[in-house]
Image (tube, rainbow, N blue to C red; front, side):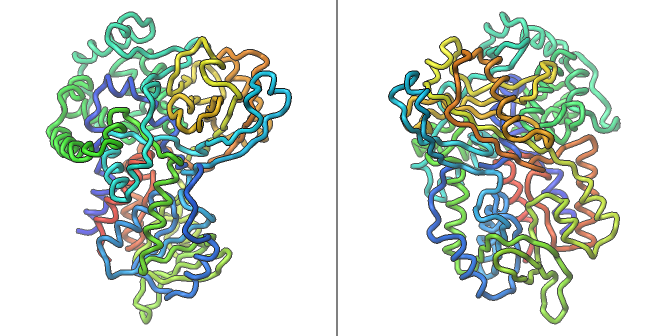
Length: 561
């Protein structure tokens, strides 16, 4: 029963957000999760005590716990919180290999002096305090995002919320080497030479025969090409998967990446019909979400975020992680240990009453015994930490593929309207593979969240590209700047006052063809050989922050300590 419940909650469940989307909404809001997924994010409120002193204090505590959570990213923090709520008498230990919480969520303030050569361009700027997200930069306020907003309210963070500006609803694609604004109305769509054919494809899709459910998995690209057209596959499917998963639409599974699309065809015979009419399950979920939203929007700050569609915080997304950490650190039955990396998970001795002994290395070398382990990191590291398992389980854990990306933060010493007067403010743009660019997309951070400019005459951007081991940071910066100049038609004398390259290795799991069946097999074998070891994070049911929070809560609710 436990195995069935575990697999059901972790694999069979799909995000409520995905199941109730409409095709029009999906095409219009595809880039809300542009860098969201994998990466998790800035300036963060200071800890109530230093991580070093907390680690030293924690080292003297009892070494036995009911559960060990490995990783203090958003998944680990939410899992630890949920476990303590469900089991108030049981101890939880949270281990983090770095010195800070948040994982890929990394908000940061940086101070930079503006060189004298720029003063003639912007004499009011001699120095700048810049805010950037090294990872994801916004959260959706729909579907699972409503549950995240409920968490924000529980943590008392609503006064720190920042809703996306009106410009964040505007989306662009780079098409034929030019930025193309996507239509926001049916009239605009009918007049758009790129979108008009897609509308015709959507009408034709209503009458196309559905694919047998026994035909096996299908790539995102092939699904769009079969149900709509090659044009739709190359224009939207390819851009969407690159922006969210940093991987090719020809390699990724539609059932794993966009289950609401495959479900619509399977249950209604047509994607368009299924999305417009919904399924019985999606309708039930929609009712629950509407009830939750009605309760949440009584708070004006949350209501503003819901109307906007996306949100962040005054000090960035890491605010959420810091608040979760501070709450856990006030709990006497929670032990948080930073700068400790798990090196081995061994079987516990019967005399100790624990199933596992977790050995760590780092600034404080210790071990902790536990009945359950919740693993939030990549599965390759878990394979190395579990030596006493079958060769097949080792292969399954090591076979999971990940995408690695580089994120480049850029700031120019002019406001957006002065920097690019020929462009309308927008959330950003994605780049289809047919454009043959290194960049995957660019977000216009100053347009989406102008509050983060702190009132300074600046323009902030973030570019995302595949991680290139053969290029150093200077080469990456030069290439990114050259492509941004070409895409945005910047003048030759437009030079940034700040650029920083951050690398996110193994950040986003690839939902390749056969991902669901492979994951079910992996979870089954893990449960059989290592009962009590549970996987969390973006591998299971969505790579976005909201998805990771929902998965952490769902898995934590499905186990017993």
